Image (cartoon, rainbow, N blue to C red):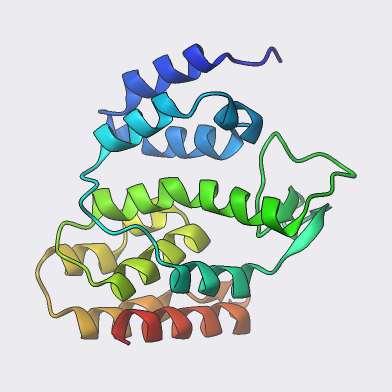
Length: 201
């Protein structure tokens, strides 16, 4: 498949950024975008991000990033995850990951920060009530783990945007997202508990 140019990616995002029903398609493309392309010219990407959502919302804090790092784990060589997808660093996937690839820890952190951009945007765009830093961080971690679509269609989002008291919403809704094919997964239980602590801390 021919590699798309920066201008082609720019045109795509400019056209679709105002179409909410295309969120899943944009999520897939963003995840697959080569890091090398991002490094070529980030000006248009920053313009897209600033136009897409209200950037007065918080960015994820180092505390939130540390939580994600702890649960994702760090692998400095490419491997196939449980879903059979080539992965590297802190759960990074995409067309830039190939068999035999190796990276440094600094490169893994950079990949994670770039991966988090769209989840920051998702939380800022989908949640309409003010959030504390801890609440924001917890939701970014949740979206990173479960996907933007999960947040978009969740009762968690509906209740928060409906103006309900946030503490019981986090306590009641996040624990619902712990199941695998055969029931609750201990790793997801611990992650949701950590996100709750971060949100309410």
